[in-house]
Length: 304
Image (cartoon, rainbow, N blue to C red; front, side, top):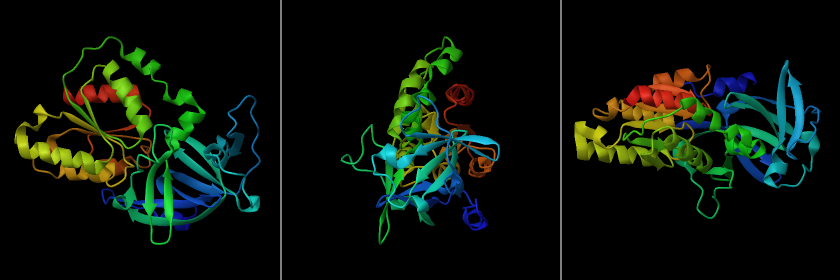
């Protein structure tokens, strides 16, 4: 990552802002959270793997690390790059793994509020879609992709929960109410499948932090100090349109009643380098996706 990019990264948590690296495939402009980007490099010739997914170009070695290369344009159904000499690899890290995404151009970084990011409409969004948000700027639209879903589509084993479920063994069914703020349809489905199997069937999902906060404020108004009669814990992603998980957590922890609500940040962005952001906004715990077994143990500890 170059020095100019490093200097531009948001250092303060809970501002409801995000920095997006703008890139393009064909004539379509897309974006990725700058926090996920380790560096941007000129393409290296990958070593091809036998019987690999058709969108997996192969692997490269970058400073002794082996990194898979994903042809993002091919995955999304675009034509090959018209100017391969301009192509770039966006080397990213999330879910505790590194990947290189092959794109056609990389242009600039935008700092915006999550309020400027709109959720896709029912027309543009579906369970199969890789689109999680649309940024409308004065002169362009930028599409935000669900990179975690892209990787699961390429390697379905990344979403396998069977080991975590077996490790939990026999479980008592809990009546506690778990609220979940998660914008990714894929992750909502995974949590809906997993949590009831480990004893937590009483779930309510919200697709962004603003939606979840509005519900929590209403609960606080109606139930006051007895809000735990309605909700016992919040699990939140970080990257969400309208309001991100850090801002949501900060707002809850500054509320005179809701500050006792346990908040767990469950995100692909939880790394040793970024954990301080969740600490600064008062999160009770932070867990990296897809550590489902750890998530179960943390829920047990916080609400029993």
